[in-house]
Amino acid sequence: MRKHIPNIITCCNLICGCIATGAAFHHHFATAFLFILLGAVFDFFDGMTARALGVSGRMGVELDSLADVVTFGVAPSAMLFILFGVVRYPELLYNRFWFNVMPCMGFLVAAFSALRLAKFNIDERQHTTFIGMPTPANAIFWGALISSSEGYLTSPMFNAPFLLAFEVLFCWLMVCEIPMFSLKFQNRSWADNKLRYIFLILCVIILGGCAVAGIADNSVWRMLSRGIAGCIGTYLAMSIVTGVKKRQEYA
Image (cartoon, rainbow, N blue to C red):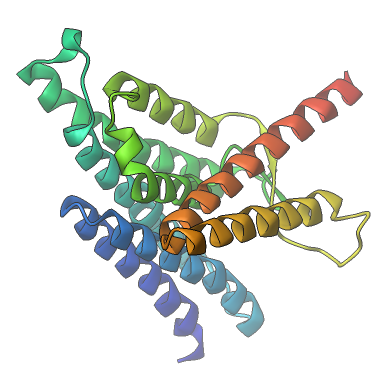
């Protein structure tokens, strides 16, 4: 039974992804985001549990990738699919053709998430760091952004081409060759984990500020969701700046 525990946890991740996808297609963005987050929790613990029990195996790795494609690829794609149906379209694209085509562009996230996961499985460089944006981070960003800021995304200040460009940028970030740090601590040393500690401190500040703002106007969950999106943006910025500095040092 012990050897099946990590796979059961992985299947819980998969089920969360299925529920998130269903919720997204019914325009329940907050519920979809909540289950993406819950899936990320299961995703974090399945590998840890496998290592702790000494039952790591190839089947677990493959099952984990399949579950991640659903939770971190298909679920945010479903959210984008629905969002493209309600976002504003400029006059040039205001016709039935684009109304039918643009929502399908939301599934680019699912395709690039699958590419990212396949690349991760065969890339020997990604044991302690990531090359490209991890799929959970991408899914959490989109889930947080869409569930908390739908009003802005569907306002006259935003439109479908902007949304598509933003989506394409994040798809590229998942498969690009930019090194991005992981949150895996090898030890507790400040010197060895300076970047990780700084990021976690910034996250506490961002989320704390958002929680206070949410309490003030009775919208804690919405503001925390925005804070989570801000944390992912901070992670990307720190990773890119650090990667550029390292390249300059080696040049």
